[in-house]
Image (cartoon, rainbow, N blue to C red; front, side, top):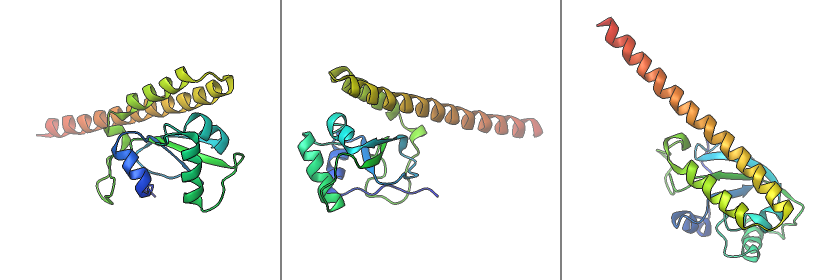
Length: 164
């Protein structure tokens, strides 16, 4: 079942500004806008992905997380971090465009590479490399899926033309 990840006002504002390209959730969502998902503890998300989450600081990310979950979320709690272009379908319940039909994948990978470049920690590099690996694999797979879809459509069109 396809489902759209809901966002609060704070997140929607940052998505619309192009500042938020990942979201941490307690479960995996099957949202067509998502390119990749990785499970990480909050401490890692807070330290290395707070900007990608749309926050101005690690402290703001923690504060918003606590408000969303309505308790003080500890650093050892694990979340599924969903990466994607959430600008599509904001406030809409119909017509969400699947990720493979957007040019956002290369932008997302570039942004994570920039985070990795600015990260001085060995542990940070490890986690950001894992994120990049998942995104690049997902992006390649989705690009291949899109190519397969277009080739099968072309093949069907060719067969129809041959029948005429």
